[in-house]
Image (cartoon, rainbow, N blue to C red; front, top):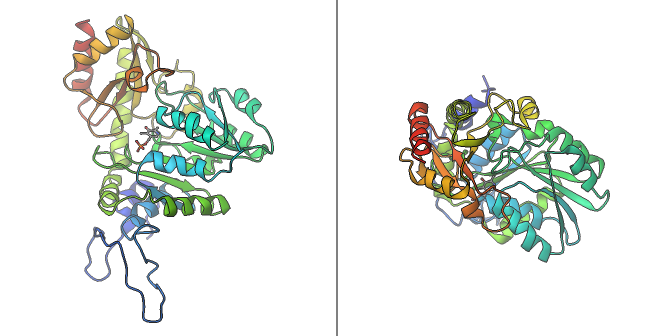
Length: 379
Ligand SMILES: *Cc1c(COP(=O)(O)O)cnc(C)c1O
C-alpha cells in the first residue's frame, strides 16, 4: 500500500529503503564527482555535485509530495531560494510584493531587484482590492505573498491572490515558511511556486541553513530557476540535506504541538494588563482570522507577537527577564525564541517598537506561559 497521508510520508521519508543493504535511512553522499560510463554517458544522472546531488534529492522528493507539487529544488538558504525566483524574471518586469514580509527579502527587493531594473510595488496584501489595483496586466510578472506574514502574522487570501495574478497574466509565488505544508497547501489554492526557508520548521532543530522552492508545474520559468541554481551554485550541502530530511520526519508532530501551545499562549495573554495587543491568527479578533480559518488546516501556526504596554524600552526589558524562552532571532525550532523585532529589522521596519516576536517550540506550555508571566509582571 502506498502511504497516502502526508504525516506518514514524512515520518518514513517516502518509505525509502536502500536496495543493496536494506538500510532504512539514506546515506550522505559527499562525492562532488561521479564516474562516466565507458561509452561517455552519465547513466546514473549524476555528473558533478553542483547541478544535482544524490543526497538532496531525498528532501526534494519529500517536500514536493507534501506540497502536492511537480518538482522541488533545495538551496543553500531560504534567501537563495527566494532570490532565485526574482533572478529568473527579466529586467523591466513588474513585481507586486507585500508591505509586511520577511525583512531580509524586502531589503533585497528594494535594492538588488531595483538595480536589475525590476519595478517592485509593495502593497497591503491582506487587502484583496489593494492587491488587485496594483496589477499592471501584461507587465506584472510576479505576485509575491507571505502568509502568515512576519511579524504581525497578517493573512493573505491565497486563492484570491492566485486569481488576481492569473487574470493579469502573472504568477503567484508564496513564502510559506511559517505555514509549512502541514498547515497550508498553497498549490491546491492556485499558487505557482511555494518557497520555504527550510532553516525553520522543515528542519526544525536550528542546526541547518536551507531553502526550497516547489513548483506547481514544470515550465519554462522553472527551467530558468533550475539553471540559476546550477549556475550561481547556491546548492544545499550533502550533510545539511541529510539533516534536513531527518528533521522533516517529525514535521507533523512538531507542528501539532507548536500550534496547540501557541494558541494557548495567545489566549492566555488576551486582555493581560501588561500587553496592549496579542497578534495571532488563531484569535477571533485577529483581522485575518476568518481567512486563516478557511485556508489553514488544523492550526494557526507556532508564531505570535505581543505588544508590550510601555513601549520599546518595556518590550526590551521584558525580553531581558525571560529564562525558559531564549533571546534569539530565527524561528521554527524545537526551542522557544523571543525577539524584539524592530531591533533586528532596523530603520524602515514596519514592526511596531513595542513588539516582541515569539517562536513557540515544543516545551511544556505551562513553563512558557509562567516564564512570560514573570517577565511581564516584573515590569
Ligand atoms: C528565515 C526566513 C527567510 C530567509 O531564510 P534563510 O534560510 O534565513 O535564508 C525567508 N522567509 C521567512 C518567512 C523566514 O522566516
